[in-house]
Length: 211
Ligand SMILES: Nc1ncnc2c1ncn2[C@@H]1O[C@H](COP(=O)(O)OP(=O)(O)OP(=O)(O)O)[C@@H](O)[C@H]1O
Image 1 (cartoon, protein in one colour):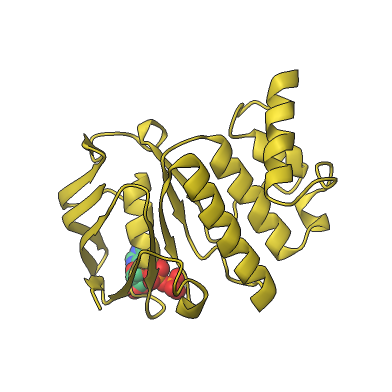
Image 2 (spheres, helix red, strand yellow; image 1 turned 180 degrees about the vertical axis):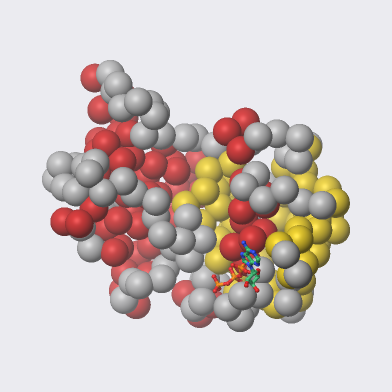
């Protein structure tokens, strides 16, 4: 279970104060107006924003004292964060070896994950040779290879056409069930997760507005 209890994040003159619980293994989605505070919450959970106060606990572990790398959290950023000079295989492989010294079994694992996200045969392509949806899948593959149990996805559906959005939701849902992940994602298109997400909450003015 992810427990966010009165978690207060200050960015200059903007303040977010969040309360949310997500059961273990659930898929939760945040919707709401641009600038409402969705990404800021994901960044705080991942450890890239330091909250001023409050509680942040995942499966009994207090996350606040932990550095980002020590948290049981994988995050896919809005801009995918792919390195332009690395191939799909290398970008995904960064999850296993930041220095890209991939063993034969590492390469096999990365290749298998790229297959899993529908990128078989595209291992050698650079990000510039992939579509937006394919780049999103490389970033998702990298997050999945870290095998961290809490997966945060910032706008994984943005820039995709309706069929690709449905495919991405299917993929996220399948990986979540297979690996027992707890997933918290943001989206501008709540219809895409309706019926799939266990919980959809609205974030506005730095607050979670539970429907
Ligand atoms: N570094 C910063 N310094 C000051 N204010 C910031 C900073 N980063 C974000 N903000 C403000 O914090 C608020 C929340 O931004 P956030 O990116 O979390 O919103 P969001 O709901 O994810 O928006 P979007 O849907 O457009 O991605 C916004 O009003 C934004 O202007």
